[in-house]
Image (cartoon, rainbow, N blue to C red; front, side, top):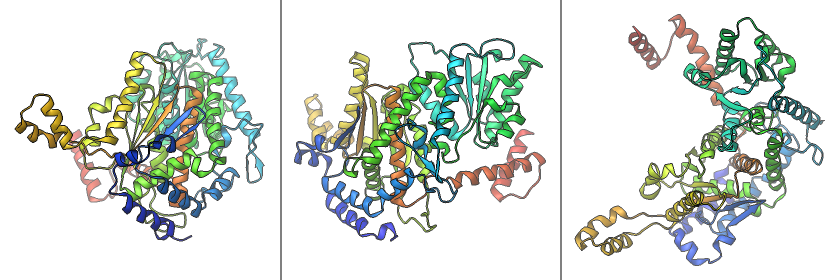
Amino acid sequence: MIPLAQSPEWRALLAHRDQLAPRHLNDLFNEDAQRFANFSLSQGKLLVDFSKQRVTADTLRLLTQLADARDLAGFLRRMAAGETINHTEQRAVLHIAMRADGHDKSYSVAGVDVMPQVRETRARMRALVDALRAGKIMGASGKLLRKVVNIGIGGSDLGPRMAVQALDNPNQRPAIEVRFVANIDPAEFATTVRDLDPAETLFIVASKTFTTQETLANANAAKAWLAAALGNADIGNHFVAISNNVAAAEAFGIAKERCYAMPEWVGGRYSLWSAIGLPLACAIGMDAFEEVLAGAREMDMHFLNAPFARNLPVLMALIGIWNIDFLGATSLAVLPYSYQLGLLPSYLQQLDMESNGKHVTREGDAVGVMTAPILWGSAGTVGQHAFHQLFYQGTHVTPIDFVVPVGDAEPAQEALVANALAQSAALMKGKTADDAEKALLAAGRSAAEAARLAPHLACPGNQPSTMLLLPQLTPHAMGQLLALYEHKVAVQGCIWNVNSFDQWGVEYGKQMAREILPKMLAGTGNFDASTAGLLAAIRAGRK
């Protein structure tokens, strides 16, 4: 395949960028009274508005031509067919099978139908969740288990943690309270369990290999915490494992029937739909969890079947590439206007940056263009009083995704929605120095003072943004939203020709930690000058 930056489609986009560069978003709206209708798209009840992106119909036409040239259609077929598209780890990438209904659609890996395995895991999850929520599972002392603590990290933590907070009903006490521990810092474990009764607490240990350093450290802390309170009682009833290493889980003290496997063809950051979603199912119930799956499945079918020009994940991905590689954007801000979605940016950081934070192609050559953006953000309206200043008057092109569950028409919710709409519009329109000066004069400032202050009040505008509207933050809508972002990332990886499904950089960091720790404990070892100096300073400080 011809290098991306040398392809005629890429060069055509560069030429188009140069033609479009002088035009402000205000110009694009003035030229097209139907711009919202022409650049927004619905899928189910999800509406996505791209009209405030710095694109025209020609931009989208050229971007879809790029997708065709990079054989995006073939990539989608290979993924859905269970082919080994994660070529460095020799794995299929079939997380879409985990949310299939099991009847209307079949998925296979290496010629083997995987749906019986999917259905069996789902049925086992339902049995545990239903029994737990019905008050039928007791711990070692005979008390009912009413609290769940999930111990994991990365994909075994970020997805379920985010979704539990998102789908929690703040006005009701949950049937089962679910908490999370991920950090190897013992302060997180201690803080999480300090007001819990060990006799009523169930731990879910989530580690595909059952060797993850942070997860095992916290699992052992949980075992010690239980033993200190319950003595010699059988504390195995207080553990569930989500792991493919059943032997290691059993050696830890978790019964085989309490172990839930995770298919090798599901990557960690794509695993919320598998048994990794067990804490979410405990929190919201298995029926609601299956609604999350149904929402994702609806987005899957749209993604696999809609033409690229009307395909939400494809358009979102292509516009992202336009912003990164042609407009020079180095970051993407995701701003959910919902307190409950406050962890969405953290979840998407792993999904996007771990997937496409790559510098070589599938063939091992330099990509030659910029890949994944730095993804960041927080819940609105808090950020308006912090980092939005950079959007308005800074020097960066910063594309923004506004994620807005519309909710009911009551005053507080209307204020939240109004803020999201206002930020999006103001960042697009901007304010000229002349307009600022006129406003100052109208407010009674002197001509000299108005002239002096006007440049400081001016905002260039022209900041690109996408608005994603959900009617309500329901389990179904949650599934739609997360699947949309998953597929966006996969499309971008295909266009850039990187493997979105491995994470060798992460593995290298873990390897370094495993090498340094025993040497630190022993007080020996050869290190680079910086690490050696830092260790010496640490030891001196401790003395």
